[in-house]
Image 1: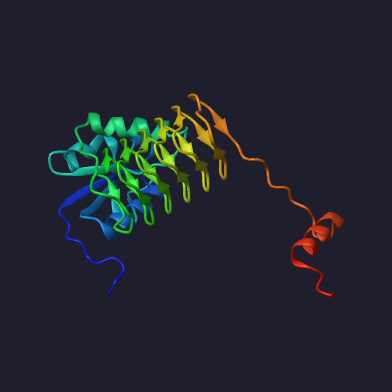
Image 2: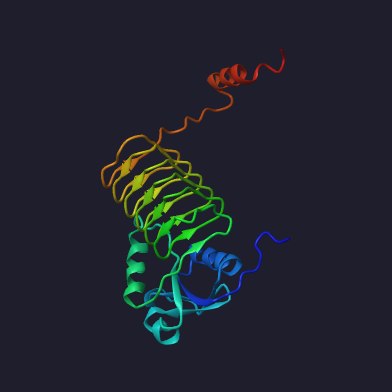
Length: 239
């Protein structure tokens, strides 16, 4: 039995972007969705090549003619550059052009029937998304996160891998939450917040806040302090 059983393709989509995120988006949509990518699109000034990942790249000025929104859907697959403001801008650009922006949810993500989500979400494998969760538009959840019951994640927010968002947390728009961060329950995270890798957030954050963890101390293995720590933790091999 294959890990990802074949799914019938019901719609064709164009992917906005031609870099790493767009490459991954094509892979996931091909493997595990009802959508078939047929082309990539970029703004005219970034058109350097004619194809990417075996599909044509079209300039934005031609996309509605070659892939009209009455027939094709779209997915914006860009990184968190500019604290997600670039993704927000291109999401709005595609919406204004009349495209329906489709979401990808991994078949290996745990969700519940009452999940509410917007357009253009990108949700990878091994999520545990509990009941009464709401995701805004253009939310990215990388692999292996826990989203606690009753929590809300605002539009254009990026959540990296192995993040724990406890119950009844409200995360604002355009936030970035780094790998292994933890957010306690019943707190509010304002818009445009940057929560660094391995940070622990235990209280409300006003808009624009930055949270950084204490730096890990690196000690040379030859240092006497390092030797004492190793011996006290693991014992002396000679004893």
